Length: 352
Ligand code: PEP
Ligand code: MN
Image (cartoon, rainbow, N blue to C red; front, top):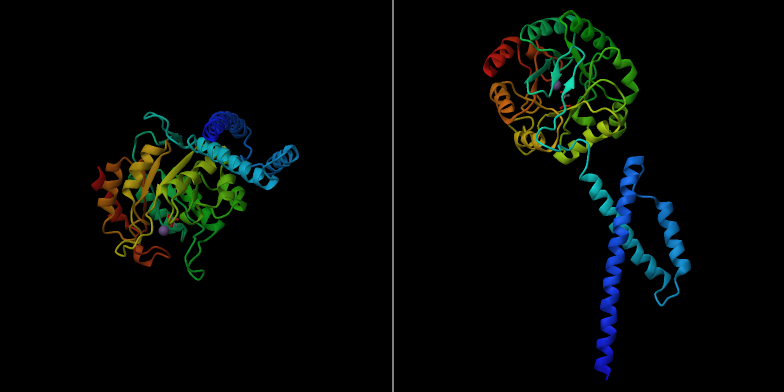
């Protein structure tokens, strides 16, 4: 008798379980629709007011035997699961994600040249602008070898506040004058979004350094400029974090982002950083954005510039970045890694 009753009650529970299961999934499907609408509206998945209201309504409707606290705890769990689902769906569709093998961002530059079109682009110049003469001598040599993008770095994010911090706006002016003389484009590192307007007068391509890769306010602001943005991988950033940083710029309205692998911090001491060459291959699979390899900051030494440049080309990078200085031993920054002009010419010969 009791056994039959138990069987019957368990049967009722099994039926209810299936009904709850169906209702939970029905709810999840609707939550996911809401997520899509929110994505289009650009609003956040998490709406604490809406969540509090739903809990209040449930509390008011609850007739027991579960206590209000238990009901709220159960529903909070349901809310969390729905939000995780919405986030997962949103993540699977980030804008910088490569959709198909032919999906690639080709960036048109103001001089009519392109980056990301299958050519191997060289971005070069000294670590920092030091003088007009230094820029002129470097740019002349680079232009001779067909380089179109010149580093015009006037703000240097140095480890020590007592080291050379860059020439600031006067340095930008020098870089611009020299670039105009040789028909080159200027790329220059921006430190803060307050500099956007001033730097726009001198800069063709904004540059976000490794130390600012996760400065989301700067990234969002650069999503609103018309110039392309070079984004360097953070010192210890995973590839996922790197792509999310790019997503900040792209989702804010600027699709023209160039990624730069610049080496990551590891235990190795014979290089300044470890060039993550497999990371470049993965980026080429995972994103449609162009990827450039910085062979200077990744190595911190000039004697392996040629093999690293060859590796960058072989792995499918869209170009390389190399620091060149007319007299590297006396450079105000990164003296150990900058190439002299003859060394740069050797590198270019070694690439062709
Ligand atoms: C640079 O390329 O000028 C530079 C400072 O490098 P990073 O931001 O990668 O350290
Ligand atoms: Mn440097």
